[in-house]
Structure formats: structure tokens, C-alpha cells
Amino acid sequence: MPDPAARAAPPPDPRVPMAAERTLLAWVRTGLALMGFGFVVARFGLFLRELAAARGAPLPEGRGESAWVGVGLVVLGVVVLVGAGWRHRRYVAALSAAGDAPAPGPLFALAVTAVLAAAGLILAAYLLGAG
Image (cartoon, rainbow, N blue to C red; front, side, top):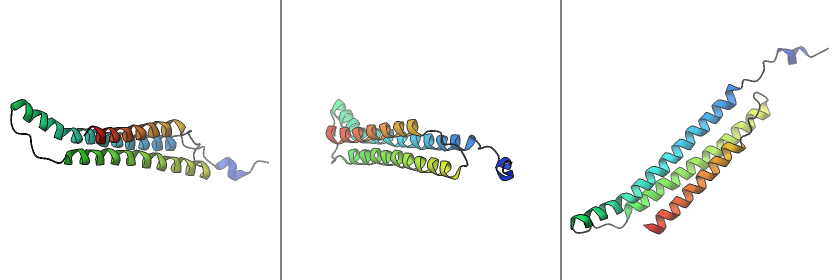
């Protein structure tokens, strides 16, 4: 005879892992936005120099602060991406262990996050080298 408690248990809700993946993707968008904004900030000083040179004006005095701020934002975007992937992996593992929801196989989302984080590090290195 089947256990009455097992029969009464509702099926796992597929919306829970889907919500976790949407949350991961929102953090990925945030990380990418930070990296893009960092790139723009890093290149703003170069733009000002080119603009002054085109007008024949004296070049602005600066020590490249915009490059360092931009690189900081790119690195912050990488930290957001890595943290998002780590939190997503932990949450999906907790869902599987609790038996509340089946694990959706987070390998793809984590691989995308890792690739974007690596791209952010390459972008930060480029900004430091080209500054």
C-alpha cells in the first residue's frame, strides 16, 4: 500500500527554477551594463583629448583618472557576473537537495556567465594596456 504522505505531496512547481534563471539573467544584464559603462568612462578621457586636438586647443591636463574609473567599473561588472553565477549554482543545488523542484541543469547559464566574466577581464586588460 502506498504511503499516504507521498500521495498527498504536490508535484514540484516548475516556476521556481525558472524564476531562479530569470534572476541570474537579470544579474548578467547588470554585469554587462557595468562593463559597458566602464568602457565608455575609460574612453571618455581619450575622447576629450581627441576633441581638443581637433580644435587646436591645448590638451587637457589629466593623469588618466577616467581609465582607472572605467577599469574599476569593468572589474565590478565581472564581480557581479561571478557572484551571480555562484549564487545561482548554490540556489539550484539547494532546490535539488530539498526536493522542492527539479534542478534545471545550470551548466549553460553558468557557462555563459563564465564566458562573460572572462570577456570582462579581457576588456579590463585591454583598457589598461591601451590607456
